Image (cartoon, rainbow, N blue to C red; front, side, top):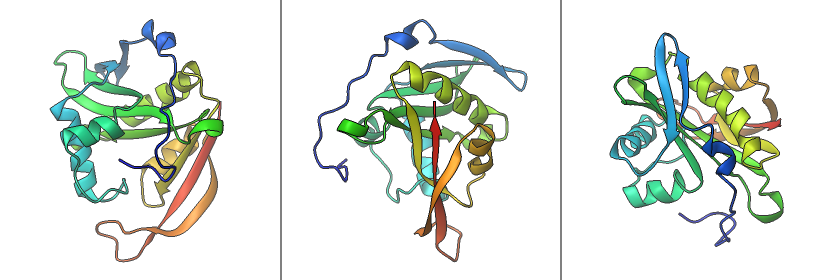
Length: 190
């Protein structure tokens, strides 16, 4: 996948700060969960493509193959939230630089909860871990570029301390929406 910044040297970061934390164990609505490093996995790719096909939360229109998923989603620090009893994948998220070079201390995150596991508190868990773990990876702040005005996660991010720092009017052609949808740019300084 090409970036608007062209071909840039990959920003390296030190994962060692997370090695003592991961796997992370917790409880979400009476379900024991374990957060592990996410690696190449068909269930994660399928979840990503399912959200793309829904067409309401991510900007992509075309499904990814495993190579594209690996390049985009698994390029830096990616995690899978699993059922602590069955090891079933419940949700996935990543933390990576939002920009290259002089701005690589600003991170971005991507979050997906598999549809049958939504409304169970997994997004709040991922968001909370994102806020705790990003600084351990050396990031100083976060910027989410496209939080669509119709996305239920908008209120979650605000409750976790993110601020809307700008709005892109008519930014997205989302499935099921007859009008173009605004996108919020959100930020948090750690």
